[in-house]
Image (cartoon, rainbow, N blue to C red; front, side, top):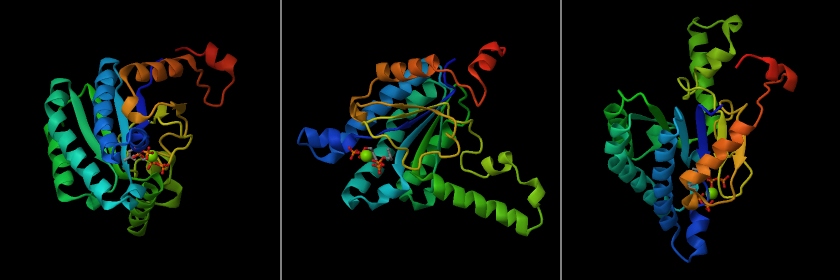
Amino acid sequence: MQPRHVAMIMDGNGRWAEAQGLPRTRGHVEGAEAVRRVVRRARQRGVQWLTLFAFSSQNWGRPSDEVGDLMQLLVDFLRDERQEMLDNGIRLTAIGEREFLPLPVREALASTEAATAHCTDMRLVLAVSYDGRRDMVRAVKRLTQLASQGLLLPADVSERQIMSALSTADMPDVDLLVRTSGELRLSGFLPLEACYAELYFADKLWPEFTGEDLDAAMATYTARQRRFGLTGAQVAAAPA
Ligand code: IPE
Ligand code: IPE
Ligand code: MG
């Protein structure tokens, strides 16, 4: 089976640049090229959901020049890729604390979301100013508000209700989670949504990541047996 939802932690832009004596921002520029390649390949491969970790809540702590460059790159990406998204039936949405984003980024996100809202072949989700725990806090606030209005009783609280209070409410669980740059951690990315994801760690730095690397990650996924707590024999006997 191929993954329906692929999520990627695009890491290593800075190290890629530094290794060549270039400013970190050059790594982010090359990283944006890798995003283009990977989105294109995912679309060709029939991936239905692709979620990309573009900027974490913790990334606000980076030097302000780097943050500014990343925000500008995001605006440029959304502007430059809009036509290709439309041509390929790709709907773009974003998760994360968008009220923290500079106005031009919020505007670019809103207008790209609106322009691609009718596209149904693939969903591209950008996680921007995202952190899973912070998203959970928001969800709990929403639920406790309902409870305080008498609209949610303790007996009604369910997995489904909790998941649907997250910013990822309309998204399926992550099947395959990829991180580049050899780091073996999740950095707060989709903790509940990826709780049964297959993990794939690539040593390549994100600017070097290619469509073939995505193919390799997807092939690894396909070769794994997802047992969801059952035995291998049970899974093998179950109808596909
Ligand atoms: C990923 O690359 C991009 C963002 C986090 C925005 P990094 O900038 O984290 O690159 P390294 O990890 O410093 O090499
Ligand atoms: C995670 O990368 C966030 C993104 C890829 C946008 P970082 O480079 O910020 O993660 P840590 O802090 O090293 O784990
Ligand atoms: Mg990093």
